[in-house]
Length: 143
Image (tube, rainbow, N blue to C red):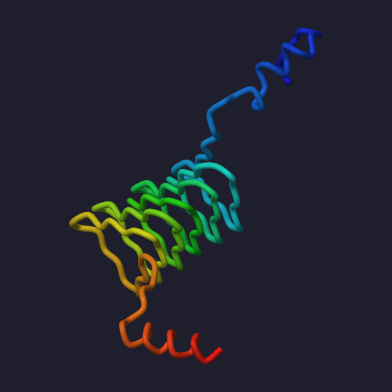
């Protein structure tokens, strides 16, 4: 876009497609967004977002960040405030300054001393009770 050269190959080599590093999306302090945010790569939020935020990678909510809506991602670090349901497929890390009001569904959870959380939490893979295993085995044999 800003390349003054007429060489098209030079423009391609310096474009975003040439970068081997994934993009990091930043919503800076003082920025307010209303609506859903979707990304394939990392998102860092230091401002305010009202809406659902989805990423196939990591979401970081900085200490000045505030989300009024749901989070869906692979990994998350929360140092700010989140009001909504949080679904993290791998690791959710609630930092000491973090505040989460809503339900959590995650693979793994780390909570630092001082972090605050109000809501329900479902973590890891659900295992069957021994009595459920026996019932399932009987039902399987009947089929």
